[in-house]
Each structure stands twice: as structure tokens, then as C-alpha cells.
Length: 427
View 1 (cartoon, rainbow, N blue to C red):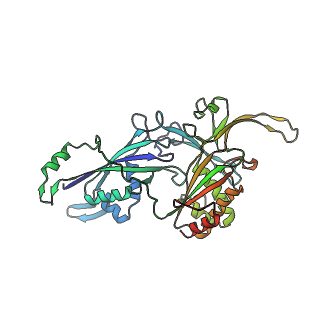
View 2: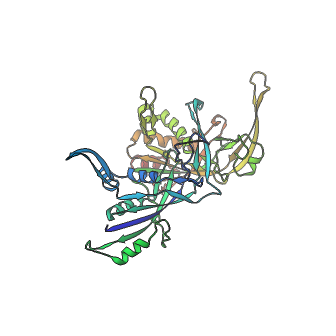
View 3: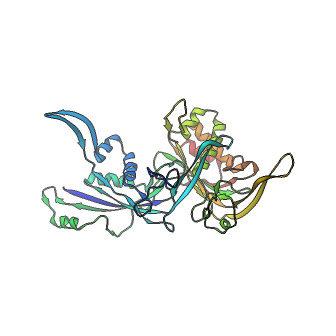
């Protein structure tokens, strides 16, 4: 035992976090909770995300392996190597009032925006802003350096739907190292005593958290759109079935049947799933090539190809609508033949107008030029009102105009779609 290193890692949820439990009671997929009923990031999730960023050779070196059976005297032996890295659960340290867990409703839609039969489901999320703190240990200096390297970007993705606005986490760390032997020859008694008194679960280290700024992950092109609502509101629905379902705003106390999908603090959001659905449909209209579309946006195999899944190579973030004006509307369905109201069709909705937001789109380098060009054209259609997000788009809902564009954090001089196409296609 020549060396030990300990990491205190702080995870801050930048987007909703969906890490499902194996047993779900409240929803179709409940969040993982600890014995206190608080959300937790399991050590297995942390180890899995870190391990996924390594090459096969590095995985064997730093995480160990069991290679298979090898003949030996007196029987058989299994060739194996233990892990040089150990991870521990990251527990909730701060967040919204109480346990920051809420429920998201989802339903699959066809190309006509009609719900697919049997495709309704809900799941629990951990709200953005939740802070978790966990620990990791390395038993070699090489393993410690590799973990530092993997944490250097400052951004990790946990759980499901990470290409659809979920699971984005800012990772920061502090490091404590112990060189227990001098030049590999004799024990460093002073360091050994300090190590024996050290408790990695009760450790307050001064100094800044590292890295001090998040870097862009390599191998991707990032487009950031600054958007402002430009129409008659937004219709991405969250139904108020039970008392207390409405977000913490006055409008939730006025008897509305539904309102916009919102965080617990009442901030309306446009989920990445909604953006992805709109862009997938629009890009598909430009491409006329189903194979390229499926390869870029991902898919789940059907009857012809059961069990096959392809992960999307284009990611869409979740957008928070800020500085919105709220409005409550009461409407009734009208019979087209009698012009009379339909019985039982009266409903009240909360909606929002005039807000501004940002959308981040990440494109993997393997995405071809044709898809990139079609995506840029779809972005231009958003600006000119030919593509809208959410429901009721036939009556003016979900329209936005673009006020600014950045590519890989470099702002374009103006809303320049020719420049956007050049930057994205040449990236």
C-alpha cells in the first residue's frame, strides 16, 4: 500500500434527473430514494458513467475485469483484476424545499400529434438545482489522474433520456492524496498517521472546487438558440388532477384543468422531448430519407427488428421560460353542425405569453452533412413561424422567434442562418 487518493465530488443537477428505481409505486418509474426518502445518485450510476468514458483497455486497467476460465493445477482458475477506483453514493446536500422530486407525464405522439394507444406513462424526476455530494477513492496515482481527467470537463450525464434534456449534471471535485511510502522504500510515518486519522465521509477541505469552469465535451457541435415567444401562448400540458398538482403560483388556485409543464417553483418549461419531436418531424420533411433520420434521431426497433435500439446522435436540452405573462382561459368545444356547446366539453387552462428562453442542441460529429443542413433549415423555420412546438399549433400556439445564435459558445454576429449552416456543416 503505497498510495491513496480521495475525492469529494459535488454533483449539481443542471436539468431534471431521471434515475429510476427497480420497484415503482407512485409512478411508472419512481426516482431512487435513500432510507430518509431523499433522492440519491447511486454509486453504481457514478461508476457506470465514469467507466463509459474509458476505452476497453482503460476499463480493464482502472475498473478491473474477470477474463474467463483458465486451466490450472487442481482445478480451474478465473483470471481477474480488482478495481483501482471505488465509488460511493452521492447524497442530497441541498435543493428545493423538501425532497426535490416531482412527476412528469409523457405520451408518445404520431406524426399527426395524436396520442399513440397504450403509450401514456409518467415518471418521477429530481428537480434542477438539487446538489448531491459523494466520494470516490483511488489506490494508485494513475487511477487518480485518470479520474481527474474524466471530471475535468465538469459535465456528466446520469440516468435516462440524456439526449432529451434530462440528466445533465455539473461535477466538481476536491482531492486529498496520501503518499504512504517514500520512494517506495520506507513508510512515511507522518503521512501514515494523517491517513489513519482521515475520514473521507467527514472531510472539510478548503479551496475552490475543480474545475472552475465547464468545458465543452469534445466530438460534438453545440448550437444555442436565444428564443422569445411570438404567438398566442404555449400548450405543453400538465394536468391538475389532484389538489396540489398545480405549480406554486396564484393561477394554480383558480380551478384550471391544466397548465404548462412546470418545475416545482412554477417556472414553465419546454421539455427536450417536445423540442426533439418537433425538430425530428421537420427535419424528416426536408430529408425524405427515413434511414438517415432514424440514424440521427435514434429509434426503437418494432416488429421487424425487435429489441434493437439506436441512441439519438442529436440532443435537445430542456428550456425554461422566464419573464412570462400568465393568462387563464376558459373554453368550450362547439358542435360544428348545431353551433351549440358540447356537453361536458367546458375546460379551463393556464397558459403563458411573452417569455424568453434558451435551447441547446448538441450534434455528434458522426452526423452527416445532409442532416445538419436539414436541421439548420428547421431552425430557420422556427424563426419564421413555420415550425411550432407543443400542441394547438394550428391555432398559433408554440411560436418563437430567434433573437441570438451561438455555435460552440461563439455568438454569431446576428441571426445569420447562412453563417449558422456554414459553422454547423464545417464543424
